[in-house]
Image (cartoon, rainbow, N blue to C red; front, side, top):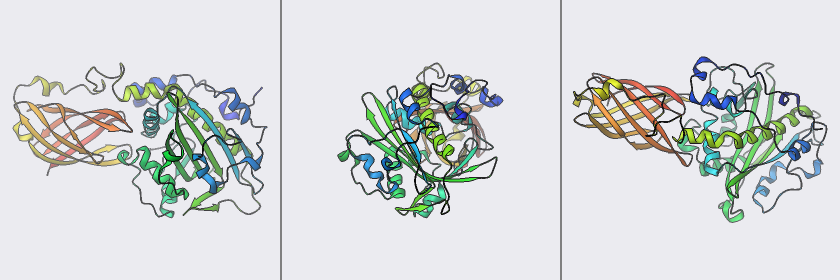
Length: 407
């Protein structure tokens, strides 16, 4: 019988969601039963079984992940002779495409509810969500200062900079990998994401320094993930840096727990990622036929009024308050009677307005933008008060405050 780490025994009696979380159409994913990873994976990462340390992938040899075939150990964990930890997990996701996986990964980091639904109980956030420290579970994850140490200034709050190629190039630079064309080495390659981070246990204040990377490639109609974690080690400017004291060892139970968490987390992605992505892109009952979230009906007073609002024409600059902080936006609006059209600049993308209406009572329009290889719908509605627009944007991140002033 496989003995799991204690934290992974019980997914019953889930902690209640907050009232605003319960109201979200994504709340249903929180209650989808958590599936166990494949038996051979659980057996290999059993808490009482350590792999041969000689078969661990050295942190300086990450580029071996791009080589054809597999390593001697694809599932396992151990405490190395020098006291650092190592773990490997290989997960197959036959029901998820590469585009869905990348989008789901972004979805999981949008706000508290999304991360909770990814892995109930074990992904419980503490306090307000920010991209800067992530605010995940009983831990706070910090990566930005590790990136700065490698000479990288990256705005992690901009999804337009989180596509597979950009994330991979960031990972290559952080970890000293010099590969120009990964697909020349592995035709099935999709992305390599991750790098050096540290976590803070919010209950004890204890710090843990690790390096984690995930190698993603297509397999059949789905994808395959190979996760590697080095505990007590960082890569800074391409060089390994020991982050535990001489003579100290990274606790064995923590090394095992990280391997187990990775196995559960990505098995969970195979269970719900496709349905989550379908909802995000208007593919199920959570959306209207036009693809606009049901939680954001068109502005009734605007669409029912017959008196146009020519005063809304022109250039506007504003902000949308998203989970990762305020995001700048620009609008260039035109009207033809009560029809509203034009463009919106958001997250570095210029997007055409769709189904726009502008009357004396209010305005509404929709947008469709490509995020992580898939199209995502947003709905904006509000009112004009002179040279000020006030309203909301509703999309998979939730209902977000919107405000703009005439440029």
